[in-house]
Length: 322
Image (cartoon, rainbow, N blue to C red; front, side):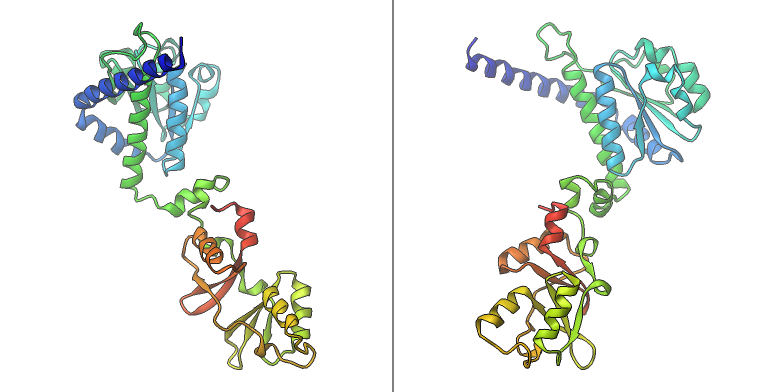
């Protein structure tokens, strides 16, 4: 078989799955979809996802997506549930079961146990007459006319449709709950995607931890202060005690190149008054863009007109904000 043959089969798989899912979407119950979303939203506890085999993998992914987008959720393997993990479920929790046949043995076996734990049992199956569907207070039928597998055996189109429904439920709840990019970032402290929504205030060095000198301080004394704090810059106050300038390592290099007497010249002669700044509530990745554009490594952070901190390229690189 040549490489071209592989692509022909791949393209047919895409087309078959898309065609079948479009047909299934036409038959999807709007009423049941809205009901299942509404019940999940109003749960006082968490949403527990269950599934076995391929459906189990889909259920685990849906659970992860729900949790990251504002709907607390976790996955329980039904086999483990029958050996004690049912204890993790409380009466305020909801259970969403994913099963194409609706007759998955490991789940049917524990249905009575699930009912004793909570009345909030929901399911997505391909058979509305199944045992699992009949035990659910809300059932969403996800029936597909044909798998992409040429033998119509391997779960392909059915699992793709289940995954899409899980994504659809997650996003519908996200929109309804007005889940913000900041909340998304809070749930993804270790991921690059979430970090794009960190604010400058999340990464900045607070004004209380920044060395500050007055305008009449000599350059030499300012250098001593900068060296003590080890940040590579200091802020400068005017006679009204307002921050009106910054003095960085770059300013120092330019000063030395001009052979200025650092012992007897005040920092007011060499400080940067027209410094670049960014509002505290702007996304941190915008700070990187400003610094890169202006070829600087420190950016003053302001809350309205007041200086509240400084964000450096060092903090951005350390957090991997891209």
